[in-house]
Image (cartoon, rainbow, N blue to C red):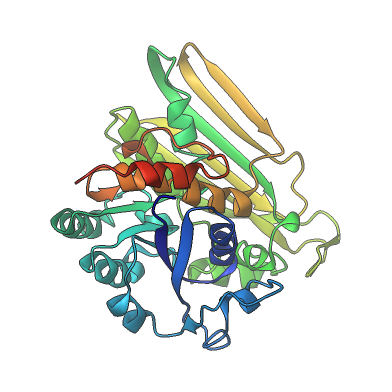
Length: 348
């Protein structure tokens, strides 16, 4: 029959719920504990929060610190914050209990100058406890970095990489529409931008990941964010956006090497965006120009990448890893994760 992978799950926002729902449907996996700091979820059954027809007999613990100190599992799935600094104590506690961690924390996807010290601390701790940590998702973690890096495999020379991701935020969840400032007037957008409430976290991490994959040392990475203005009245299932208001963001990151831009990342995420797509352009020998028409749906893709990465995480060396450190992550057929667990994982 083989062993079952035990999982504790921290964080039940929209992405966390999607991952938890998929985990419950994955053969060979059993969730043994759930935590979320929201008072409205405290003590409720996970099945109720996920909108399932029946209970799963897992009550949600609102005390994340207490939960982590008592946790017992093979893996912890952590979907609590985008901040490396904010998530560090929770991950450190889980790792101290010899639990592998996979997280959607964008700032842990790859080290930048601002997060280098946090990476070193967590990497050292994970190695001492002989477990692995990985941050991943659709972006960062795949479309604008890992996928683009993989696309350079047939190149004998790469001079520049440009990745563009266009997302119609009107088709996404309300929390994402709020995150990109949909519906704000010009003054509200500027204030939200200054306070850090309107932005996509992860472009700098993706730029540094791409550069590292190619052995480039970047002089600097510059990021800019502009408002995408609604050309007409726009409606979503949850918002009414008048013409002239903010429909979302146009965010850019530029990585410089020897004074030249070698990494260009452009994220357009706004309500009403036309021709959603993911586009990767590699200037080199040979030149590669690839477009994913419609783009890769973020919510479902993030949950799938997290679960499909589990076998690679469990077989990987101890430490804080990135997607560049893992063998190719791919889809798992039903029951495949269970089969791999039955064969055992690499001893660390």
